[in-house]
Amino acid sequence: MKLVAVGNFRGGIGKTTTTVNLAHTFAKMGQKVLVIDGDPQNNTTPFFTKVKENGKSIVEAIKAPERAKEYVEASKYTNVDILKGSTALMGEELSQSDIAWLVKVKETLEHDYDICVVDTNPNLSSLTVSVLVAADLLLTPVGLNESSRDNLALLQEKIEPVM
Image (cartoon, rainbow, N blue to C red; front, side, top):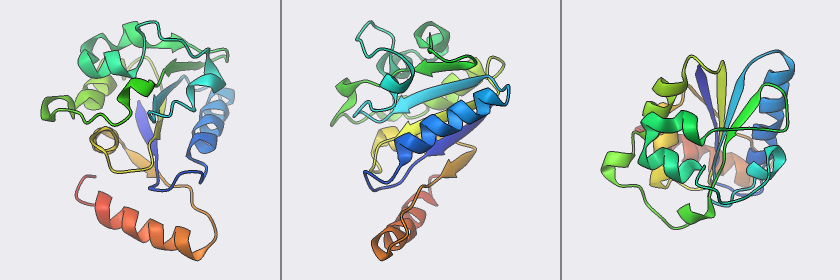
């Protein structure tokens, strides 16, 4: 399973839209896709399933990554499953022992999916760092303006030590 992180330090630049469209496109190509809503704003989840707190979300996967299969839900689309986001992560920082949660989830689910697409939050929180550590590729949507270009340079500077 390849893991694609969709990230940028800006909000409103198209991270969620890119995540949703990538997942849908890969699924239409016959790939088995796992979507992870790694943004505490929880905007990706409603595209794929109902938003409800039922003990199946990214929060549980962070706490027990070896049980990730239990927390993944089928979406309303063929070939797409989702690990739902949670607003419970707003303002929270992961402990040092939790940083590798997604690496462990990836190892647990690597034979179940062809690709995993992760929507990230617009900052370099410990949650974002954990996604970047596990990622095979970072896809960064940008606008065609000077501030987006400057932001891209900042993003590159900040994530190089992580990836």
